[in-house]
Length: 163
Image 1 (cartoon, helix red, strand yellow):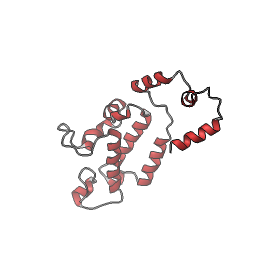
Image 2 (tube, one colour):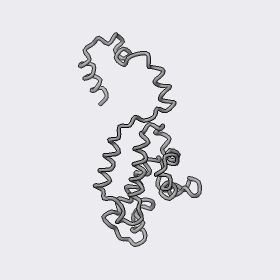
Image 3 (cartoon, helix red, strand yellow):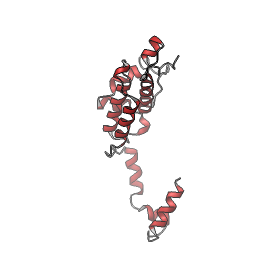
Image 4 (cartoon, helix red, strand yellow):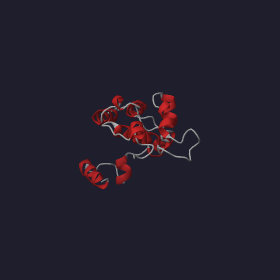
């Protein structure tokens, strides 16, 4: 039997797997990633033990979605992308497997969400970090000079140091 919390309802009810049964489990994993919470957690308050049941009503409304988003993201994401991810999760969690997208459709949707180039809103923590170092150019502070060094060499060495 599948892992409780991830297993599709039709599998839990009948023991039969369908092509789109895995799509349900993938939707649960996406929901965990969005919220930073586990699928099942009896340490959460009553009514919140099952993540899917607790969160699915908050995935399509901006205000509600922001409340359940993983706080470790510090609001550093495009809300449009988060809403589209919420819509995708709901499609993956459809009770009837025939109404779920295929994994190919899930991939295509995730690629479209990833392509959203909307600038994320800066959190207060990020703004304060930027204020501390905004008086120096990155080249000046790292090189200790005026930035007159060959920028191609600098870029090349920086790329190597970040691998």
